[in-house]
Image 1 (tube, rainbow, N blue to C red):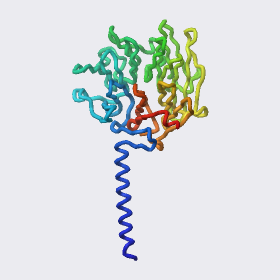
Image 2 (tube, rainbow, N blue to C red):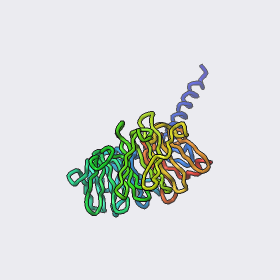
Image 3 (spheres, rainbow, N blue to C red):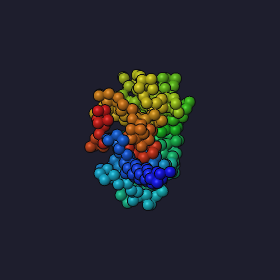
Image 4 (cartoon, rainbow, N blue to C red):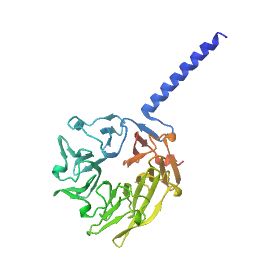
Length: 336
């Protein structure tokens, strides 16, 4: 064997190891396979996001994290030293306070004042699934029903009040004040509509829903309400429209219509009308006036499942995924 062969082999191994370490370091700092994307970790799994000034709060299986949207520094908020959170699935800013919903109750954080509300205070269940503020009311979805939190206290709503199911994990409030509650309980789940005039309506697969498991509810400026549904490799989305005070399904979409996967995980409309539609396993559909594109981990997403998306006033989009946060710095650049 020539003397330089083992030396060359060692050199190749050293270069490969250094390259691997550099790649790992770049991934930790922020992957940039697609120049407009950047990964932020921790956190790991993210189910909820809310922006308060330049602080982005992220909630998930590991509790609450705070991300400085300028420096991208990730820390634990000071209030987490006083209370231990479980799986956080809801975050909201309401009446000057940060509200946090996890599997142990609903917590209000206002400066140094931290208080947790549970079934003892009127919640239908301790496990909170969703939070949506609307006007002077904070709507709360739990595994035991919905609740209105307002000046008069906590008012619970269950199947006895017309809900299709007590498991409420998605809430949307349309432009007229109508409340849309989604239940993730197949085969009996679906959508409950609560009109401002006291009207009630429920929708199941018998009424045209692609699936009985509702994952998200997203009202649109034009009055439409987009509902994501599915389980495993089945599902789709349904679009509702209220006419003459009566809501109804006007169309549905599936993978055959261009969705990345059958199960829709989240739906977000950006300020310019661009739609972000995430599947659970097959990536994120970006649907804009200039075309459509499906992004996956191969393009730089932190995970193929974006559970929640939030657009900041500066136009950047934050995706909370099953494995970290993906920051989209320029959505339009993705389509060029």
